[in-house]
Image (cartoon, rainbow, N blue to C red; front, side, top):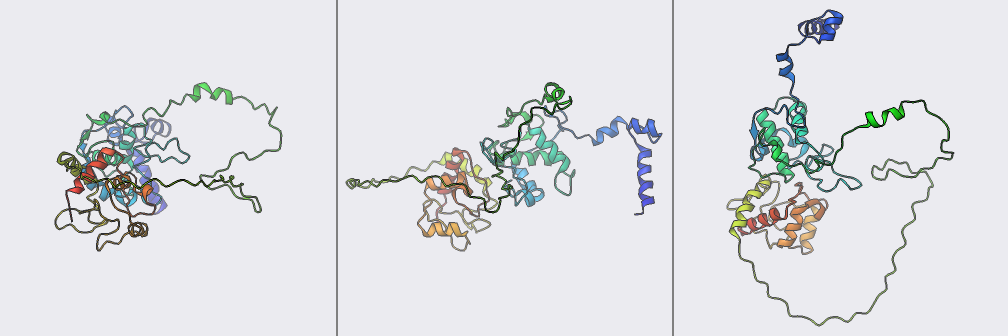
Length: 353
């Protein structure tokens, strides 16, 4: 399009609607009508003002998320490459390198809804319906273990969700309390004398240049270990292991929790390997032992070294897969609730080889 045509299009748009300032100053167009403003105003405030009618749950949200969001944010909201992680990070805000997600950092759920509705999906912003947005937000909450999968998120239930970091922010009152202090002329007296010394280094970001020839930080003195001769205790008789009774009620709960796993794993008759291996008979079996599935090298090595998927080992793995085993293929962020871990394991116990 030529510059002339572009200019003509801009002037035509301005002639149709304009802010009062433009209309009065330049004599162009007119002030936008309230209904025209309302058509574009999708703002959702922290107190819920502006939330639209509609609803959605994590069950529907999982399918929408997979189609609209997973290419960047992963099937489980765990993030891909440098795209943001939307799940995880619980109890990391006081760490040196915290993980800030909807489940760990966001003080208001309305910010998630507002941003998704306005700006997502990437490259096709503003195309999600209100119901789709509610469902996606519900799935993100579910991925952070903040709601059950059948919780219906809507305008009416929005504030039934408790945000973990709701009390982690304060009102910025610096314009009233501090700006006046900075507005005067700098005194330029009693400044800190030279030389200026580097007192901290950006170790987390790894951006501080290392001077050539600079000595590396001195290694901490190694603790001296004194060997002691300890008499070996007398061999005790091995305890008799009694299998716990199968808990049908707990397994029923585990079936619901297993919905988080179904996009990658199958169980039951006719189950096949997918992104993850078949989980029939997993409880009590050796790690990396499902025929036909290509495991990561660490998982295969763990199996060769004798790792058995006892209930305790499975619970530890499910709580934090990547923390339990570095470079595992398991992209899922983990089940943070111990009750969910135990329920899924009980459910898997119902599927033998």
